[in-house]
Amino acid sequence: MVPELDRVFLCNSGTEATEAALKFARLSTGRPGVVAAMRGFHGRTMGALSATWNKHYREPFQPLVPGFSHVPFNNVDALEKAVDGDTAAVILEVVQGEGGVHVAEPGYLEAARAITREHGALLIIDEVQTGLGRTGKLLALEHFDLTPDKVCLAKSLAGGLPVGAVLIGPAVRNLAPGLHGSTFGGNPLVCAAALEVLESEDLSGQAAQKGAYLLERLRELRAPLIREVRGLGLMVGVELKTRLAPYLAAMQERGVLAFAAGLTVIRLLPPLVITQAELDTVIEALRSAIAEPIPETAEP
Image 1 (spheres, rainbow, N blue to C red):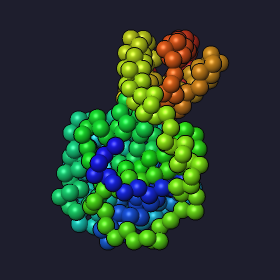
Image 2: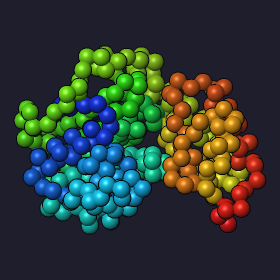
Image 3: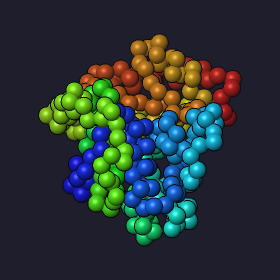
């Protein structure tokens, strides 16, 4: 992965990995502040939820952890203004999955790295959804030649078994044993599962090739209902000009399960081992679903 990130904390999920990364940032810097991105999603426990933007997840549990602020994603000026001497960490995703499959623009993550270094803050990259081959690289940050201070991993790390991890770089200090822990973190079963398949079957390469095909074919649809198709590897968002609920249902009727990312974005996260024929089935299901009449509630 990233040679500089040579320490690992093992836990049980993505939100646990985020919690650990946030705690390590405050411990290392002695500062309270955390800057996150609008539309970002980092988990549902109290610290991770405080970094998450969507009020749907946040409001039922307020007041949340103090010291968190949010700035627009891909806006370097806003990030620069938000980070100061009280900032412990900036936490960002390379691709905002839950927030609508928005990909970091060229230069944004590199600027975030420079800004955090200038102010003595730590840069945390949340790769819970994008990591382990999903975007066509082992880690999505490899598309940007980026070395953060911490990386959060989970989801596909153990092929469906519960595991999370924080990769930790040299700028993170004061991590004495016992200050943070996890009862089942690093247990032999999930660690054994985490060692299998990913490299032996070149899942990153498969995701790169299949993702490029999927994006190309979806962009060729040029359907009036589609506002934009965007993504990286096998992490694809199809933004519609109307609410997506009836179209997700129509795809399900055609045998394809897709996710919502907000009210208008169909999120496609197929397994990295999906076949070409199965990808064509997904494309055809989407094409035929959005060919149905637009609901009366559709946006103009």
